[in-house]
Image (cartoon, rainbow over all chains, first blue to last red; front, top):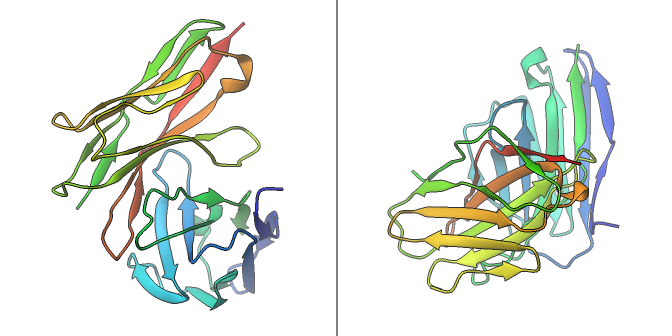
Amino acid sequence: ETGVTQTPRHLVMGMTNKKSLKCEQHLGHNAMYWYKQSAKKPLELMFVYNFKEQTENNSVPSRFSPECPNSSHLFLHLHTLQPEDSALYLCASSQALGDNNSPLHFGNGTRLTVT
Amino acid sequence: AQTVTQSQPEMSVQEAETVTLSCTYDTSESDYYLFWYKQPPSRQMILVIRQEAYKQQNATENRFSVNFQKAAKSFSLKISDSQLGDAAMYFCAYRSPTRDDKIIFGKGTRLHILP
């Protein structure tokens, strides 16, 4: 049990589909993150939510839409994706703002394949 | 903008030997946090060790230690008595103390342990 749970573990979708990735943390953290991990590239920070408010959006295409209904849940809504969006999507949580030594706790990721 | 560079895409070490993974970073901030994460084939990103920039003493966690050189902006990871279970991708990460809470990762170093 990692404390951060991501579902589904694998997802295959067509370019016209709409799907959502889910992340849930049981650690009492107040910040949650979406990262994209592609082969031979650094982890790319996509979205940051502190206290449920989005504080960072690294110019992510609008076909990715995050939602953070509370401090324990984070979603990534996907629509009209491209094949280059195929990657491992990692969710993480931590304590933020005043306790920045708090490390990230990661989920196991969702392996996304866009066909 | 902050950057993190890991110049060794892959490394190999004999079991029970010592290996050092390098990491350099670029920042204009005086206070920040540094981390090493491990990602085994299971995909779970696991915190290995962390360091606060304001602390001069190098962090140590059992067989893992860092050589933190603030002036040189260097943060290398030393693994002593390497074990087969240490085989993984290792990522160096920088965390900004500012409100946007950016956490930047390097491209990673794949470590092979030779029996």
